Length: 150
Image (tube, rainbow, N blue to C red; front, side, top):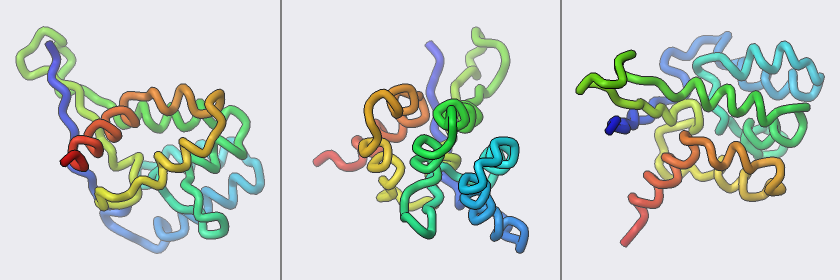
């Protein structure tokens, strides 16, 4: 049976630069401008997290994508899919494992960061159903729940 490994969360910006510091504002600006190509390009950047807070609303990037972008759920799913990888190609290998990287979901290492989950729970079920059942979200909730049990 394949093993499931979760990477430790990494900071949003490993090597901040002036260009990277502008990226979060650019994502939200592209959403306001409804520029699908630019939104996709910016969201799929490695250092952009779905947990980025919008400076005007305080909602996460994931919430804004689901609420304001046509087929935003597909874009969120694409970003979440990029968080899943394997340790090797051979599924029969003893070294085979599925790796889930939560750094694309959360903005910071802060284990208490539940803004993304809270935003998902505020959405109508028909909008968030596929995202809420995604393995990255499920493993985050399971891991978070395990850490909060008595």
